[in-house]
Image 1: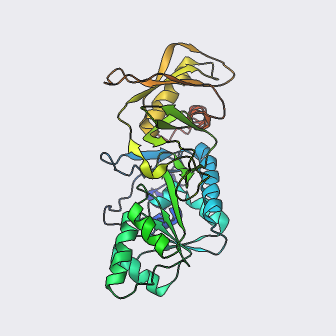
Image 2 (image 1 turned 30 degrees about the horizontal axis):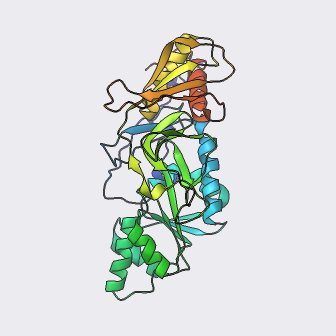
Image 3 (image 1 turned 180 degrees about the horizontal axis):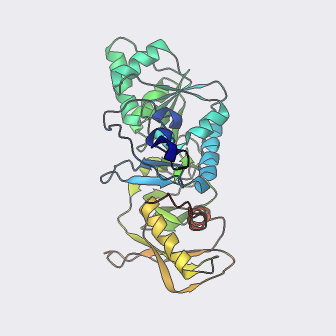
Length: 352
């Protein structure tokens, strides 16, 4: 049999590329997850999953074509926070690194530290052993750790030498008040696994953000033409962490509207390709995309109409996006689909 294998160029299980958790910078524990190996398609950069804040978690694919925008958004966040080369970032919830992604931290020379165990006691122990430049985690978890440290006789463990970066859930206001008393710098990082980081201290991190009027002062957050499912208030008075930030991310609420995305115009000349793009976005990001019966093909730029689903109880006005900058994420996903179509494997030994 070994002689036949000399002429066989399909890989064995040992020869398959293997990407451990450490390759993504996720080598820390959580109590909510298990580690399971899986076959990940070569045409996407990595797989992650939604946070599960409003429903069961689902798998999300991140394409190579969207990585640059996610990396640039992360670097913009690091600039606002003020982390520099050689700084230590203590991550209390490892999956948050997928939102950065890790390439941005490596480019800036940020050292990642993780808890030994996924617990408040482990955070306190880590703080006793090393004084990190910043702590990244959920505000309620960090606030509870602050209170535990005081009870254990370490009232000055959390002090102004360490920044707090809250992410994963809206900024905890009790934690913010406690940090101010300790003269600690607090930053509010908002984003999600589907789209990466979106805003820091109320300041947008991406150029392709749109805000679709929802109800009263609330606006649906749209990234690159795709709705996030979150609603924010836009305020001229500013964010509590930075008065220049208009997005009040600590008052975030989940949308009650199901929004359909309709492709009105596309740069591609094949309607079949446009329909495949719609299907890919559903699979990768879980967003329903429909192709208009009168879709205009070969257009100069993508035109998307966002409107309430026919099943919505509350009717909301449709929202049109016809700006190439504002559809950047959508167009990146479209590019990934087209590259996939044009890169068929012709090797006769390859089969699904």
